[in-house]
Length: 333
Ligand code: CP
Ligand code: NVA
Image (cartoon, rainbow, N blue to C red):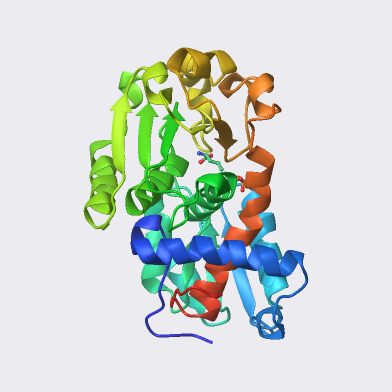
């Protein structure tokens, strides 16, 4: 089962632009095949007899269910290893855990706190390590979000995924979800406007990583930063946000809720800022009501539940490419 130099997915930054495109296209292709029950028998048995481990140091609904579901769809067996299930962090190090699990598993899917924890797992693992969220990145979510955008704009589809020159607005906290989405956007030619309070701007080292993604793309997107939500929203086709208090930041909740108050997404904000007349709303979930009002969240512009369902297809695509195909990413149909 083990390979000597496995290819890991810790961030969208690990992908070439063409590979990211293929992961999104493949997610759409797997979705169509599975929904119409036309998936090949090779796909259905691709992970037969294989066990994949899921180290989750933080809680999860979507990521857990989508990755477990994807593994089962390919005939494999997931083992969920929650924070209190294994010796990790109590009497065993990340290094030893990674080596031990590599000896028995085909892949380690891990949700961790500090990003350095998943880097440590990847350093010692002889099987692919897939990031199920760290404090810095959330690649499964970014593939999902880009798939959802591509599906939402079929009439505007160009020669590619229909995403080139799209303008999107991120309003609020520049979280792990934004970071991988912005990296992906730079690779695919999407323009991202980010509105944050001055004291919650994108950190310099993260901005440099996003800029590197643009520099490595033949058709780069652009990153615009502002403190004014109305400015970010101007002409945007998607208005997106995330929680203002990510897992691990709970003790800062009151301070953050106050700092982000005027970054709430509402129909009035979209109107004041002059969003694209056909704008849509996205959120990775879970959502707190202060971030977006119900008129948007449950309204006709909201794509949030299509987006959460697409987590499954993104997981199928990533696990197929990184575990079955050993990191060789190419278009499946
Ligand atoms: N969006 C997302 O990752 O959700 P979960 O935390 O429920 O997995
Ligand atoms: N930024 C959030 C995303 C949850 C899916 C967090 O890290 O908690």
